[in-house]
Length: 119
Image (tube, rainbow, N blue to C red; front, side, top):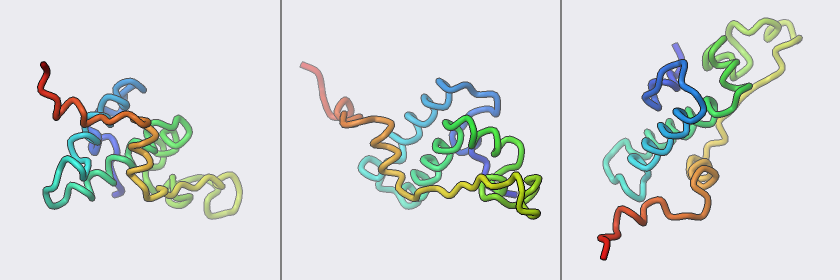
């Protein structure tokens, strides 16, 4: 069985766009390598970015929901994938979770509030 992107983000399969964004924000901040130095944090951060990339895109999410991770790669149970027709959509994670993080948060520093002590 492939990856469970819903489990990775800690959301239900019926989660809406706002719930997906909130879950990504929470998890990405928790496991970002600049904040979390524990072993495995970098891999978790990459998995979170990949899950968000798929679940935040309606087309990718629909394919994932129907066919799982293999469907995104153009294989597995997708109709037409083996016959050369209909299954021409493929997905490969771009491999840069930092870019996903930057696209989500923009140029703002999401960690700034962690280090300000009011005054």
